[in-house]
Length: 128
Image (tube, rainbow, N blue to C red):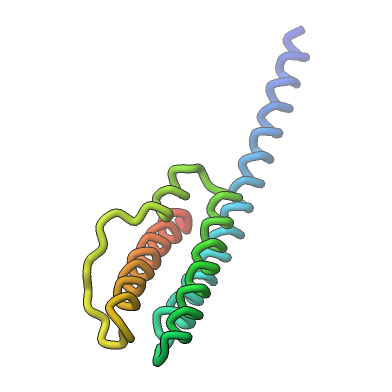
């Protein structure tokens, strides 16, 4: 009987270890994807120049798609608390971006800057 219990304990330990390894592996892949999305947010969105109302509309649409992709990666891998950390921005810094096309664009840039900052914190937290 003791042998059987010992074998079960070893078996459960192996299963738990395998599950933990798979979870860490999934998180590592998610963090890699989040890093790619962060780079895209900086290079394609934050640094994009806008010179027309149509350009601003396209930028806002692209930003919304980007944000949706980030949230999808977070939801697929992390706890709800991590998703809410990104999705609920809190207080914005209210910076003035010299490259802002309009006040509305400046507001969106502030939101993006905050999202990028939170995303960077999440990446750091799960890259240990």
